[in-house]
Structures are given as C-alpha cells and as structure tokens.
Length: 272
Figure 1 (cartoon, rainbow, N blue to C red):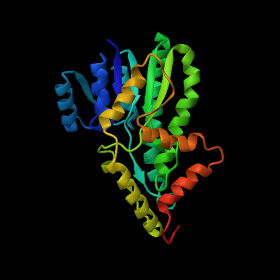
Figure 2 (figure 1 turned 90 degrees about the horizontal axis):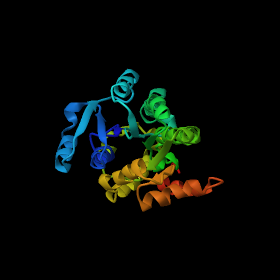
Figure 3 (figure 1 turned 30 degrees about the vertical axis):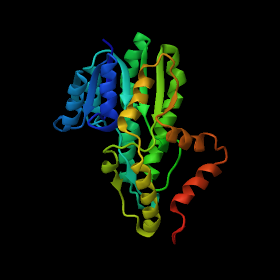
Figure 4 (figure 1 turned 90 degrees about the vertical axis):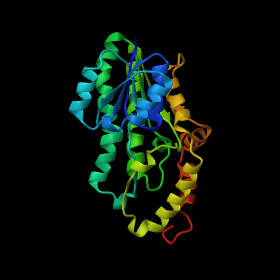
C-alpha cells in the first residue's frame, strides 16, 4: 500500500485531506502537535470507516521530523499542510514574530520535503503537495509575515519542481482562499498602534470574507486531487474565489492591480 504523510491534521483541510487519502487507498500517517487533541480526527476516520496512523509532530522540531520520516517507510506522498497565521504590519512585528512564521510556514516545509526526497528519488516516484494560500501569491495588508513566508514557500517549490521532475517526483502547491476552520483562531496578533483604524477596517473585511468561507472538506478535495491525479500540475486553487484572487497577482506585471485592490481594504481611515 502507498504511504502518505499529511501534517496539521487535527482539524480543517488537513483532517479532511488525511481522511480523503485514506479513502483513496493510502496508508496515511496523519500528524498532529498533540495526539490528545486528535478526537475530531479520530471521529472523522471512524465515520469514514478508514484507518489513520495518528502521530505526534511539531513540524518545527527538526529531530522529530527526521524520526517521523525515518520511521514511515517508503513515502509516496507528502502533504505539507500544517501552518499558522499572523496579523500585524511590519513596524509592529518583532524578529521573533517573523521567525515564527518562517519556522512553521517555510522552514518546516523545506525540512520535511528534503527528508522525503532521497527515497522518492531512489524509487523514481513521489508527489509533494504543499498547501500554501492565496496569500502566497497576493500580499495582503497586516499579513506581512504570513504572506512573506507563503511567498517564500511557493518560490521554493516552484524552483524545486523542474529539478526533481526527471526523477519521477511531482511537486504541487494548493492555494485556498478563506476556509472555515480553526486556523483563524490560531492566528497570532500584534498591537497595531498607529495603524489601529486600518487594522479594524481590514479585520471587518476579513470577517465578511470568512462569513462566506469555503468548507474545509471542499478545499481538501482539491488537495487530494493534486496528490492523486494522473494529470499533475504545479498550481491549484480550491475555489472560484481563490482563482479570481490569485489571478490578481499572476497577471499583474507592474503590481498596480494588487495594490489597487488591497488599498481599498484599509481606505477611509486617518492613516490611509
């Protein structure tokens, strides 16, 4: 049976991706930071009548990541899903804030990917799917650290893809827009100081977006498709909203379309 590792599976996209891959016939290693908080994952697996190998992993723990991969066997699919958000503009962000975003959203992804590559290369097959965000293509107000890390991981994966392709390894990124999940609850926030009015305008706009958010099980279907399709491609979006939003940047040669749109999110305040 083919082996898949999925990180960040305690809720949301990761949970439904793990279950979806198990339904597709994979032996799924589903990682969570704390196995004591994996009840929703266990319940979802039971409801779907599939088995998941649930293991503890803090993706920022290098030794833990190495032990996980070494004990996993021949990994055919890696889904880098674990992530953490942050709200704050650069003037209020500390070096520690920036590093925390890089550690979770970029460096941990690079590390796990590097660990599975030798085995995939030797077997001349494998697929690496990284869940990024529309924030990996479009920089957004007060998401400076988050978008910076997501931009970085998209650049990493786009650079890696053509190098490993001759060895039978496919690389893909999946870009969700707003998804109804506990991700928002885990977002780190900083004191906005002189930018408080602009931040409130941004948060109001964001709340409206999440009120109409995509269901995580719908987004997970795209991740599963990216991991299993016979016609792989590099970039995937999980919804029409994500397609439209990412399109702002991918066709924006001089940057004016993105800045024109995102400036509206914080306009009409004393700081604008």
